[in-house]
Length: 259
Image (cartoon, rainbow, N blue to C red; front, side):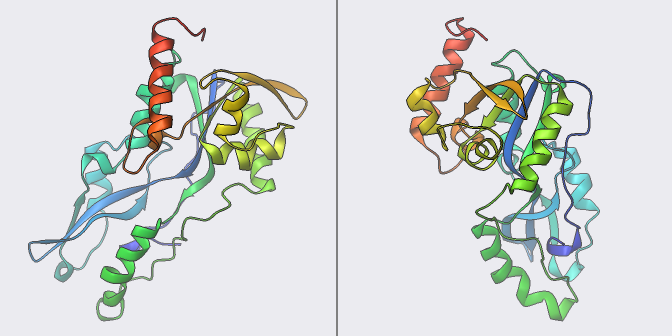
């Protein structure tokens, strides 16, 4: 499967397999985004062109330039450059600053995982590719884009079992779930819980509080939190969850909630 201009889609997984203190489960991997210019005009502000160099990549500008510089784009079609700083790695910054740091952890303490370990195209990406890229494929000998669209199911039963094994391998006893999908599609497949969304969890437990679950005969603390998009107010987001998380951060840093 390939991105526009030929980069191959690849899974993005945890590299550091040493024991960790916290296991973080997100939804799906993101991509490196480039600004495409042609004849002095911007063709696309943020075109997904490659898999992230590592899980929850922070969007380092030099890394983005290095990755994008290796992509072979015909000179007649213009140039690629890193997209705006807010378009590469925004979720990773939220993870580091608003979740891990609030819990008293950093990346070295965390085992990171996604329900789906590969990037997918959202509707705006698909629209841009159909309008701007596909009409050029035949004339310039470009590859067809075969990265799939964002699905509705990110975590099958088989994938849930793989994640559960990663959780055991991590030796972490705290499982942080980012948003509804890890609760509905992972936790509900491996544990007997009476909720399938963050809102349902918070009807029983205040936002930002932990509870205990049993996975494969082993007990873990879980901490369901809002998705980084909501926490960081990244584009379209829920004000409710943004404010709830901000309040949790204040309480944690003020010592009102025990870590």
